Amino acid sequence: MKNTKWIIIGVAALLALVLLSGCFFTVAEDEYACTVRFSKIIGTTADAGLHFKLPFIDSVKYFTKATQLYDIPPSEVLTSDKQNMTVDCYILWSISDPKLFYQTLGSTGTAEQRLDALTYN
Amino acid sequence: MDENGTYHYAGPTPTQQYKKPKGSGMKKAKIIILCVLAAVVLLAAGTCFYTVDDKQQAVVTTFGKVTDVTDAGVHFLLPFGIQQVEKVDVNVYQKIELGYSTSKNSSYKVNESESTMITGDYNIVNVDFFVEYKISDPVQYLYSSNNPELILRNLIQSQVRNVVGSSTVDAVLTDGKENIQMQVRDLVTNILSEYEIGLSLVDVKIQDAEPPTQDVIEAFKAVETAKQKAETVINDAKAYQNAQLPKAQAQADQLVQNAEYLKQKRINEALEQVAMFNAMYTEYAADPQITRSRMYYEAISEILPDVKLYVNTGSGESSDVQMLLPLDTLMAPVGGTN
Image 1 (tube, each protein chain N blue to C red):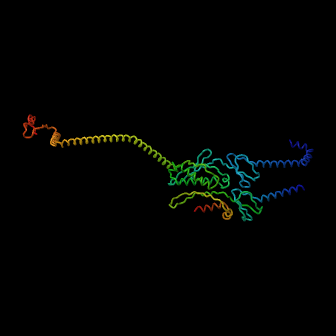
Image 2 (cartoon, each protein chain N blue to C red):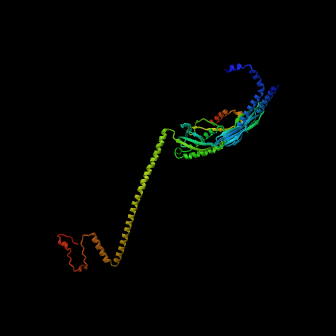
Image 3 (tube, rainbow over the protein chains, first blue to last red):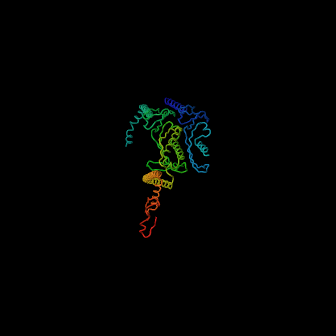
């Protein structure tokens, strides 16, 4: 009898712990966090620290806030006076609106592809 | 051996073994729990502190948020991942090598794609750079970009090309290095402060600046030696000039002085003649006849220096002197008369 009581207490404590840990999420200094409820982004935050969410229902998507470096491989171009030259440049970019970023691009990989296409012409 | 021993004492021992767990089992469990608790506490205590080296600063984050930046020494920390520490080498000078890389056994590897660049007058040169930087702001360094070193590297590369691309090849290879270093340093420092990636530039140095191929290097060396030769020739000529000029000057001075002397002499002579003429003229004015005849005699004696001259002061035809002259011509077989 005593044992079952202890077991019940243990399970309850474990459940409480899981619930509690599901209630919070942390955001690092170089991250945006988007709370997602049923696949819909319902809130974004840029403030680092501890944040609240509904357990099990809400999930969190993280996007980097840090400046990203994208080094474009050198490409040969012709100038208007028909000189052939190699151009090597790099792009520094960062996410300014995580929601829009997720909607239109999704990941940094596709973002870089888009940047590449944009800068090539 | 031991197995045999236990079998021998099989009779009495089982009862002891069954009884003891129930009596001291609770105690043992308590002890184990206590030990586990103690271990947990010890572990917690162990993770409650961290030390920071003298060359570092530590950034403390609480639930991911930066709450503190600490200097060297021992510091307190909330355990179980509530607070986390990232140590950053703030005071250490770090280096970037552009265009080459040195490994630990001091071997030297050239990286052409980084060092080759074009100058403002369409020449290609290989320029190697050595860059020193340090972390100026650990928080920015950790969180404001995903790879600050790579950003700095790209930035310096672009600014070096920017500066070299607007310099002449001679400046890059010879006397403009100092200037280029300075320009690159200023540009990079400015842009770094705009980027806010927590790095600051300490120094930029040109390691090597040379033409891209061996042929060009040799031609360039030839030009340099030719330049030096030209300089020595010019110096020689200057030395010769310095030796000759004073000599010529002295000669010129002497000539001028001589001329001056002659001029003075000539003037004096002329003045003397004028004075003589004037004196003569006063005499002439006083008695024109005498002076005229004297001048006539003088002129004659000058024109015909060999002629013997006799002056007859007798008055014309009524002279009482018989003209039998010249006597010496009479004595000679043939002679002229005057």
